[in-house]
Structure formats: structure tokens, C-alpha cells
Length: 246
Ligand SMILES: [Zn+2]
Image (cartoon, rainbow, N blue to C red; front, side, top):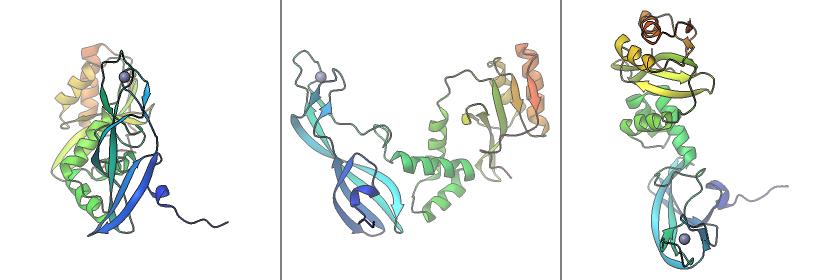
């Protein structure tokens, strides 16, 4: 059975579209959260006692050749629990929709992240603009770095390869956790000393996958001696899902 496309289905779940207007190259979507009340971040008690509202802009995935800007009305509530020290708090978006102070939805942030990984800073910026995602090269690199800062589990199997901050001009090294398939570090260059230093303080790493270039092999050899991690096993398969040099 055919169904009409509803405006709410175009933006992340949990939001309700109130108005859509078309600007120059941009679709402006006025929206609010669906929930009637919100839990106090301190005591957890839900409150529907409205204090005031403010507007927050969040960029979302482009549509029909236009950027999409969600103008979200955020409510501030009064906490009604007598013993709670928080008097006024703002309702929060679900973490799967956007970060607390984020200017992009997570699904757009994910696209920016992938562009940054695939193309690096400046080429990624040009391509992103063609996709109606106007982000600067600095933003692309910042998103890649932010999403790299998740490493908490012990690293045992990694891949190291080149990574272009700016293609043909500035290269660093990317380190991936091959067991969890995620990036764990972006090193500022490809120097043997830099990689040696990084490996030396991580003796728990047992297997290092790298390409056949000499630098990474040298760094591996030196760090194994420095950390007495003689069981480290070098491999010559790279970290293909995230490299962009060449
Ligand atoms: Zn409270």
C-alpha cells in the first residue's frame, strides 16, 4: 500500500517537524522534541514545568540538492524535586541523534568522518561542498581526531599505514585496532622516532600489520627492543579500510 511521505520521517527520530521553509540553497526545518517532559540530569525526576525555550541549529543530511538546517526549539524545565540542587535544566537530544553541543546530527557527522578519512582535509572539503555538506578542512580533521579518541580497551593487534592530512603535501600515520576495526591514533608524521615512541609505551601490542615500507618496520624493531616485547609479530598486510595515501 502506498503511503504519503511525512515530514517527520525526513529528520532523526524523536523530533517533530513544525514547519519547513525553503531558503537559498537550504531547507529550514523547524522542529521540537516529541517528549512532553524531560528527566532532570541530577535527580532523574521527570518534569513538565516549563521555564523557557531557546533555539538551536543543527545541520542534517542534505536533501533534494539543498543543505538541511534543523532549527530545534529546546525547552528548559524546572526540577520539581525539593531536595534537588538543580533548579532549571534543558531537555537533551538522544545521544544517537546528536552530541550534546553538536552542530551536526550524528548521521551527518558520520558522513563528514568518512570523507575526512577517505580524502583528508582540503580535498575532502571540496568534495563535501559538492555534496552540500559545507565543512572546512579543519572541521574534517577535527571530526576524524574526535572520533579516534575512543580507545579504552587494551590494544593487541594493530595496523599502521600512511594517512594524508593534505594529499601530496602533509602525511602522518594512522593506527587501527584491527580486532575492533576502528582508528585509535593519528600520528603527526611518518618518522621512525614518532612511531617508536608511540609503540614503546604500549608493550601490550602483540601483532603489527604494516606495508612493506622500511620506516614502520624499523620502528617496530626498535620498539620491540625498548619494551622487551619480543613476542611482537610483524605482518605486512596493511590497514586498508582507512588509508588514503598515494
Ligand atoms: Zn532534579
